[in-house]
Length: 313
Image 1 (tube, rainbow, N blue to C red):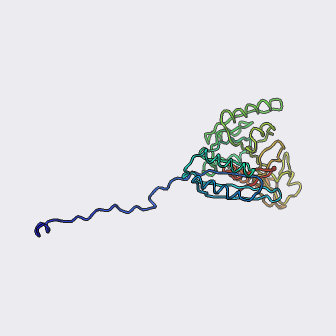
Image 2: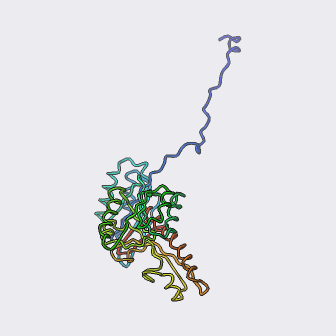
Image 3: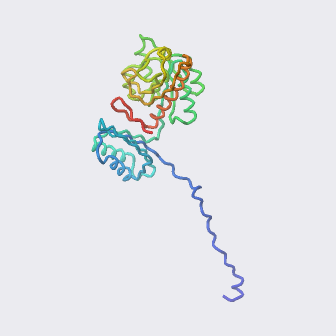
């Protein structure tokens, strides 16, 4: 090339794409499953499940464990991300079963791809009901409320406010068995309910109801069980001059108010408190304790054994 031609030729520098900001790149959404195991305490359990999940390409997000040394039982809850797994759910489930069989463990595996469906059973008291509905609306309870059942019409307007189907079943001693059969059909066949919440439902449910929803019925009780069981509990507590009142959330079982306890709380009482003060303080405890118990169940943080509960953080 001659010198004049060289002067006329311009070299255009290559354009480079602007560097991407790592914060702008969308992160892959984690798919979190919950594995709960319990059984005889033996060496190698933690390592076996860690190796199993790692081998399938899953990452452990959180793992919490506990041991009942008196009963020689081991409990563990593992939250793991399966969005990066290089096998499939069937292979992981098969692996979990194989490890559990090897260590004589029982397990529960929830892939968290569908929300749990819950039904609330109420009578006339509405403080626990409102707390559940408002916490759910605020996104604090990850579930779908599919039905409300009552033996009174009083709270229908509350259900309509939140667009929840409201079903009234009038219960008498003569019709109790038939009515409960209809309720179970509604809950299981129509709504496919996973959890029933007795939000101050003032009817005794049957042994059969508890068997159908084994450890899937949560009741709130207005005291530390078994104190002041029955009617007018706060009046009786006031008459005894108690210095503490409490609330207990537990799974309903065939033994009335003797099911596994999930959550409890207390508040102090003094001679200055009248019955209405006890009721007010007690209701605050009831609704908070019930929500805490329901949230633990929805998040698969409970393992039931020997009529007791291990409740992980």
